[in-house]
Length: 404
Figure 1 (cartoon, helix red, strand yellow):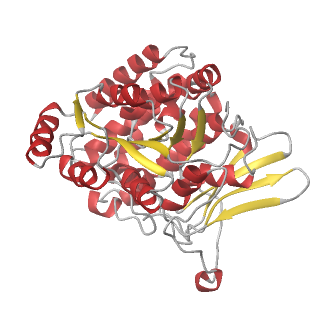
Figure 2 (figure 1 turned 180 degrees about the horizontal axis):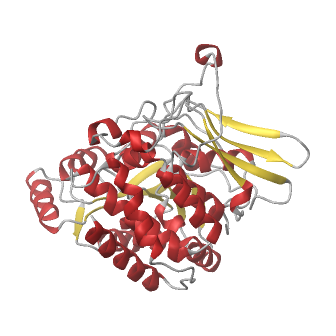
Figure 3 (figure 1 turned 90 degrees about the vertical axis):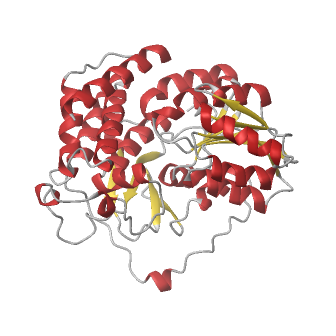
């Protein structure tokens, strides 16, 4: 990707930081890292959908110039509280375009794009258009519109740094090369297997028919939000990461391998043409890739200790069974097509199906059925502008909702 890792920059003085999706898991972890390095980062902007209680706590701590709240009523309530507490120095922006307005008002040095789902597409893209350094934590923008992000980054000079743990691991393994070049024969993304695909004998998909939302979100290794946790349980999270990796590193799907690795110690591995392989390891804590991206091309402390392999004792790896993992199979098939249209439909249908499952309206095992039916009505056409993709996303959500 354009300027995925450009030339080493000068030693940075304090840089201004915007966190989009600051009240989510990645957003909170980003602010934890920023707090540890207040000499290097000044938090100037925060955005949330509606969780103003947590946002208020963050404003009290960081005193940003702007806070963006998508929910208008929640934003109005926040503004009243800030005024009553004498914190009116933080200006509140509200509405569907609040996050993009925040970016335009501040034009900060670094933006953490951590709004979950396709909701983060507009703001992440606007940050790239503005030529900023964008830390990409939400995979959906690169899944849906990787080609458009590349074009925009090339035109604006924006730098994109991956934060998703597996893609950040690949980035570390290739030592910040501008792209994965001819010296790389394959990259490997690891998957924990979530709560259901960790045992030596994998369960059939049909055997998971009675899975409840509480069981699906109980990830054994990572502390994540409900949607991403369900995606990990269905293995769709790894499928989306597969598409993201193909877009991010300009690789065909046959050069991206997935291995089940229940310990979540090795986050990715890169095989080189000379027979060498380099793996990135660390405790399953998002502050590690966040701190790497924030400090790049240097490193600083993240709040996470180094891993002890003696304590881990054993690392195991095996190939996934795509018959047991229909969501992963669907995503791999879409990755082969290299179609933004199909990737957008896949992502949209999955978001609707997961939301329905969490609300008790759809059985766990029906999630891939909804996605497959939406994909059957798709095509491999290329979408050359964001408006087209947004229209496709809307139509796919409508179809998925009817199916639910």
